Amino acid sequence: MKGADIHTVASLLGQKDLRMAARYQHLSPAYLSDAVKQLDGAFKECHELCHRNVTASKELEAGVPAND
Image 1 (tube, rainbow, N blue to C red):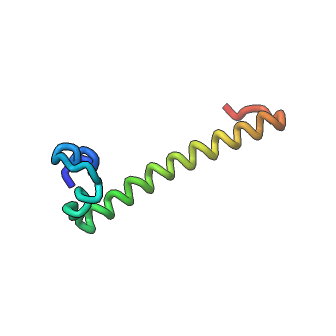
Image 2 (tube, rainbow, N blue to C red):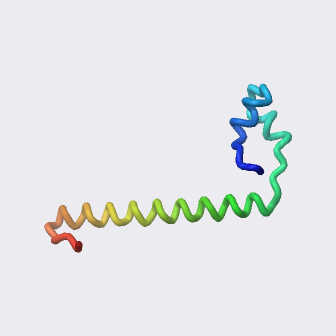
Image 3 (cartoon, helix red, strand yellow):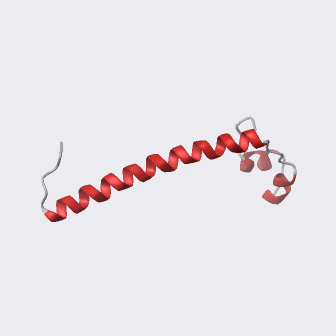
């Protein structure tokens, strides 16, 4: 919960299987909630960018002038 991902922790502890690291990983509900909020923000940004790119591509195909 201090910022290191499970792969790094497992490697530092010499664990070859992430299941062993996960067995000892106890994440608080608040930590998990914050992680979901961060992912929601990242996916929202990605979705908006993808939507703009698809819309611009369709406009180009249709011969619609760009809105700059």
